[in-house]
Image (cartoon, rainbow, N blue to C red; front, side, top):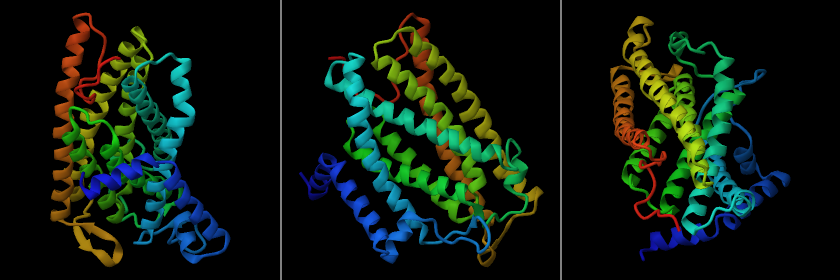
Length: 326
């Protein structure tokens, strides 16, 4: 075993203890007024006299805090909340229990993330109005809740690389890794180039379908028969609408609207980061993301065909090859 794998195994065995020690150290540092501790716990770059915030490198402290926090929360919630439920729900077999724990956590996260993201978008000017992605760009200063939501989300997706390393590999492990790389690249670049409005819309679109997919899996691991098929049907409709129809409208806006609203330009001193190169950068990442989603759509179609032939909806997209019922 390589040193990297040994370190990963060591961290995987102590997913509660190590993060808890780090979090405790940060909290104690804040109690004793250690200056750096406040950077982990409080948003930086507040605009004087307002509840809006700028952006800067010190935001990395908040992201790092939530990488550690999500590692702790995921392990603790899975062990102390969802694991006891496997006994109540009579979920047998180590593989099924593990998958249930993973999907129950995913369901919890995406339900919370989507709810908060939709609340932010609903109370914004760009609620179903992509023109406001560009009107008054650059959106350098953002409200407290938007900034917190965005940095926490970045922390979650960075933490997912650790999860990919410790989870039992699925059939599309490589595709998932590429997906996470694209997602993190889009989140980080959109944050520092002041495109959090587009990021918020894309996250809500993505999170919605993940809720239904995770719920269908949880239902299947619970041994239900009809409910997973119904939930999967809702997932399919949501997938087609959000990840292909709405997604296409967002990408079209990135392609066409900058010229309409005259935002093509490059002026870092004013937070303006959208020349033709930046436009192609974002369009390329979104195109790559759409290719991945089309690959998953092909798997979804195969599942639909199985259901129409009388089988239960079973996620061939992400379960591991040897994930058999025990």
